[in-house]
Length: 50
Image 1 (spheres, rainbow, N blue to C red):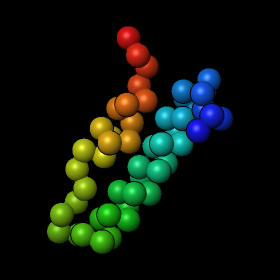
Image 2 (image 1 turned 135 degrees about the vertical axis):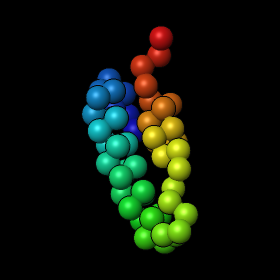
Image 3 (image 1 turned 90 degrees about the vertical axis):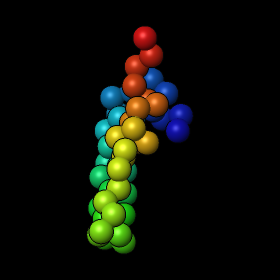
Image 4 (image 1 turned 120 degrees about the horizontal axis):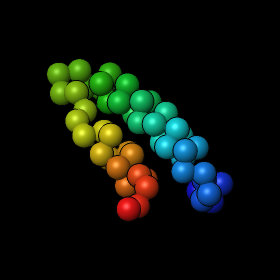
């Protein structure tokens, strides 16, 4: 995704939207087993390096 190379905020917003969509879909598919660790899976790797 080269369009987000210099836009970390935009990337995090985009990934957050994908995470919400995935969480909703997974919850519908498996209502007895809600998804876990979604923030880690979708957003943790994109945080600022320190």
